[in-house]
Amino acid sequence: MSRMRVLLLTALETKAEEAGYLSRRLSGYGIASRTVDLSLGAGGTVLGGPEKLRAMEAAAARAREAAVEALDGGMRVILGLGGGTCGEVALRVMRDLPAAFPKVLVTTMPFDPRVFVADSSVILVPTLVDICGLNAALREVLENTAALTAGLCGMRRVPDTRVIDPAADPSIGITALGATEVAVTSLVSALAVGGRESTVFHSNGYGGAAFARFAQSGALSAIIDLTPHELTRIHLAGTHVPMPGRFSAGAELPRIVLPGGLNFIGLGEESSIPEKYLDRPRYAHSGLFTHVKLVEEEMTLVADALVESLNAATGPAALIVPMEGFSHQDRVGGPIEDPVLRQVFLDRATDSLRGDIALTAVDAHISAPETTRAIIDTLDSFAPA
Image 1 (cartoon, rainbow, N blue to C red):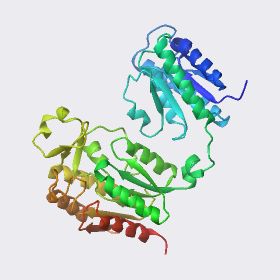
Image 2: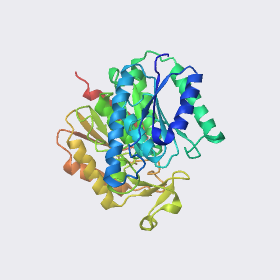
Image 3: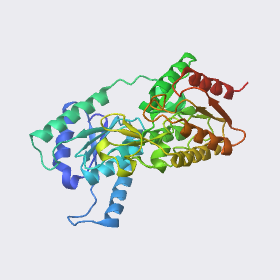
Image 4: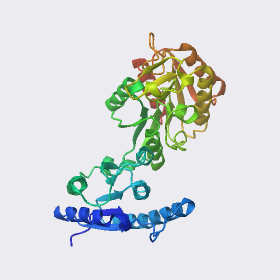
């Protein structure tokens, strides 16, 4: 048999027929695979509570060992096939592999996958039907999966260290949202003019987890936390995944912080907004997201949290405050414009920022060229003389 290129994770107690079909379809593309059993070993009994959780972790531990061995042996893709329990175990294993390594999960989507894919790239293939016996619909999904996997296995990988190993060619990590997109785009362009590469992370409650993983892995040479909006999700309201390293990872790196997106809470559709926020200024960012303006007490809380994290930095650090607006709708005539909130932030920073950390108040909007220039100048000032 040809060298194994795909590791398939599934529970053979319940998914043997479907896994066998997928393996055969892979063989039809000339792709050799090995199946790792994620069954919990219940022997037909129903496991519940702590007993089931222990069995899931034991299955994940066995599969991790197999995945590491397969990775060393030239595995090109890891596949998962399962519903709620099996899919969760497969995702636990996948998260321990390199962030950008090809991973595919074929699943009934019985859970919110964002928690699992926030800091690891996983291609999700919804089955639409349950994985409970072969039928025309499931066969088509598995055939599509085999074709997709064959493409990944056959893909010619260009030997570019920036793709294979980001730590070999670190770039500047920048945080962003749609509400700060103009500012980030201008900054990325300005850095590129100087020959500096950027990696941008979406600060939406999920992208921050990837940002922390990259910062911890040595993939970044500096941090421009232009959009620390996730503080409002962590401390006030809004969905997010656990990200304990979001504001501490890479503490030794040069770090520039701005209060981008710190002036609003990111909530869901207008119809789903809790009653306590209905009397506040807000706007529809899209059909699915509504941005609600902070009140002064909330700005004080997130400002203190941001300054506290910046004070813990061990590398060169700076705080830049654009006094004409923290986001695209915090502007003259904007629905959440509020100069008072900006001043609250600046006052808290002035009072509690560590003395050796530069604090610059810019008389410009966060998206203005003057703010971009202040960021570039500050970053340049960190460079050794």
